[in-house]
Length: 559
Image 1 (tube, rainbow, N blue to C red):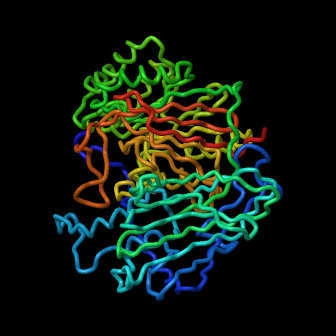
Image 2 (image 1 turned 30 degrees about the horizontal axis):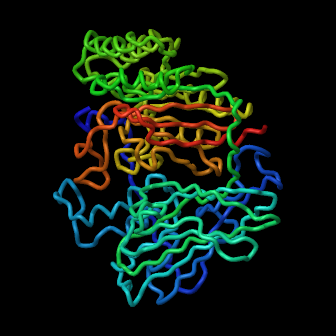
Image 3 (image 1 turned 30 degrees about the vertical axis):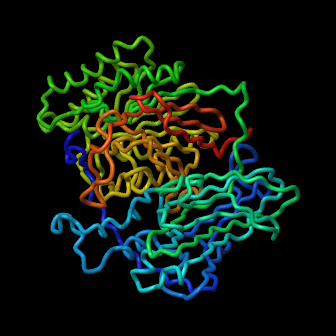
């Protein structure tokens, strides 16, 4: 995958609409914003396992947040609530050309100080942004420092021994800036539970937190009824920012019992020719980490698939992968998703290429007849989505109405069984995991339709490939909420790639490019699915070391 154009999706170009800015917050005054409450004592979804107690959703109307900013009132000085896209628009420089087609090389200000890399943000966010404030004329210096606090309403915690505060966090460390989160119970003293600063002992290791998720465990005092959380920010420099989204208070998962048994799965993505040298090592690593895996999931792009490939050449590419598989002594059944490189030939019909993909999958145990299907592995439902090779309407992206109906029906069925469901497709959804802020990931109409269906079910874990962004990044996994969907959203996981790694473009803040400034980090994942949770671990194939981990609770579980 040496050319970006080789990854082109058959999508409509997404047009970003910039929403008018929400009026600035006056200093020393309060502004309200919604929150949602769900109490296990008052009819919440689950009575055991992990569940949300309260959601501080900045997009809806219920309880109130307040903002207090000391000093002189000025536009963008202190915390404010803003549409995400309006925040980007406010940061865009005036009088400077930022079109990479016409204004190369771009002015550094066009890169927005990485604001746009907040992949896991959607809709309305909370942001404190000294850079924008100063650009719009506010005084931010040693004589006029910013001190601002975003305060939650009271969160009901009666009967809880421990809770977790979870929020999406996008933070650039300015000189001497400090971000801190505190909690107080029943009107008592504040206790600091998280700090960002230039000190290495801080939660941000003294640096930036790019599109991260904070999970902070908090002990609840005996007989406490209400918790209040405060997000404080102080700085005396006219630069950089802190943005927050999707604040949730939830019950923590209990430690796994020594008798707990999981269904394990092996996961990798995007072999694509260039990843062939790493494939054998990846399979060895996966066998070592998940030796009793019930299946091996491959999230698309089995082959490189040059556009000029004929039938013989495409089959040869599949045979190269098969030869590496054949050298393995302990290979679980393969369950692959079809990727864009698997159907990229302009010589073969799409149906011929889909047939080649299906034949390869069946050679290694998939037992499928088409690219979308369902398998149950050790009691775990796995639903695979993909282009079918029979569509003629480009608006439908080769995804039939039958496939859409299949997804909706099967998710409804498994959710009624309170199962955690793994859904896999090649493409990630826009504004979810690493890199999906880019213009390249504008969702097409079928993507939006599929995501809206998945968004109804908080028990879904969606596995996507295609991006080639590394699981080393903080937003390799994300909780994604859709408009009208379940308020807890679903979990999206970036499976990384065995082939060439991608990252932010050095020439265009809304694009990506191959990573050439450090060694590649081909990656592979394992999944351990228990009734109440799934543990996903990411590994570096070259070093064999675990590089990331996320524990996803099944909110439908009732023990």
